[in-house]
Length: 309
Image (cartoon, rainbow, N blue to C red; front, side, top):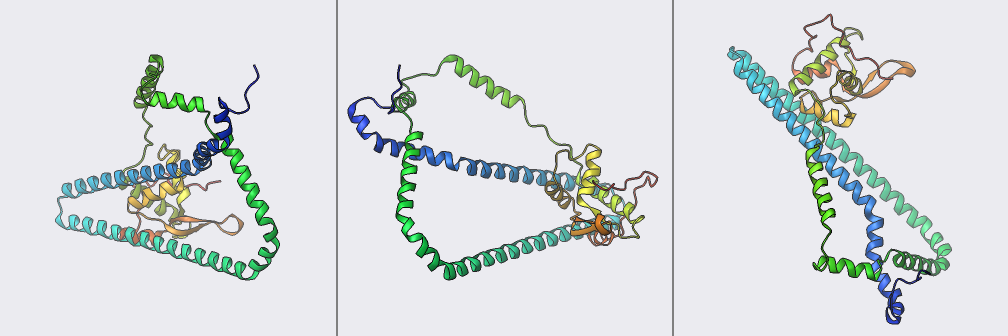
């Protein structure tokens, strides 16, 4: 049987198909064209929600651990020192975040200003020339664009028979098969039974002490600078099974929540092998903690981060 070129039945529907197809196919075409952008926005929103949840959970764990530590400390002077150190760390973290936000806003305003200036210069200088060259092509170009859009809308327009079937199903005239409903219920049960596994992370207090030990250990080998890059610290923790699948951005949020925010730029190595990245130094960590970073109790154990290749 030969297929029909126009998906319509009857002379009237066939004659009206160029108009009805345009109106019914345009929403489908727009939905197809904007689907990738919607997917990216949804993925970004989900990632932001997960990051906010991680930061919130880390803050709650750190607060509970600190409360227990203060409650169990018998010395009143030490309790006061712990509270003051915590307040200093929170102030340092907020100051660092405010500086980062201010720098980001300044860079964005600078980029927008440069783009606006370049656009204005191009419009003033090249606008008349471009218009004089493109003016004869505007009319044909608009016609071609309309024709291409019309054809694409007709291609994506749903067939009238499918539209009628969908409307009848929406009105309850057609019921879904029982097997299909069972499959949908089984899929829903499977989705609920297989939650996404949580990545193992350290408590904020343990994460802060790990960063402190890394910096103090590195300071014994680089003349007291104690420079440790954020990717180095992440690589060390990942080799021990923590923060698997975590990138530098998410790990940076975790260490900031733990009260040990990294510096914007720290250098390790020299010459061609020198690497620069956000990280910590002994002086910076001393300002954050209010004391000199201390070595781990088991000084014989090598906790120095290895250089990431």
